[in-house]
Amino acid sequence: MIVTLRFVGSLRSASGKSRLALEFERAISLREVLKRLVEEKPRLRRVLIDFELDDPKPNALILVNGKEISVLDGLKTALKDGDEVVFVPVLHGG
Image (cartoon, rainbow, N blue to C red; front, side):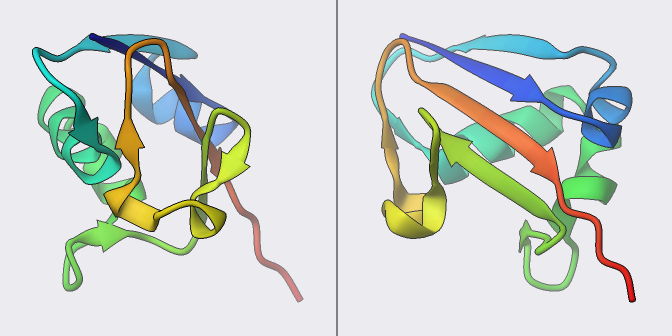
């Protein structure tokens, strides 16, 4: 099973790539994909993961096949072969 990850803006710089394909032996959750992603690309850990909560920071929008994960099943969203996960940085200002 292959899941494609896409990185936009500053997350592209942190990952060193605009796209990355990860292969898994079985169906997995988005949480498992994130865990593997930060193991393979440690620079992404500090920009994507909140150390205290061990969850994605609120400064990144995560889409699975074009849908924001809050309208799916959050980090429990089940992924299947061919799915695309897009990470978009969210800028806050005032």
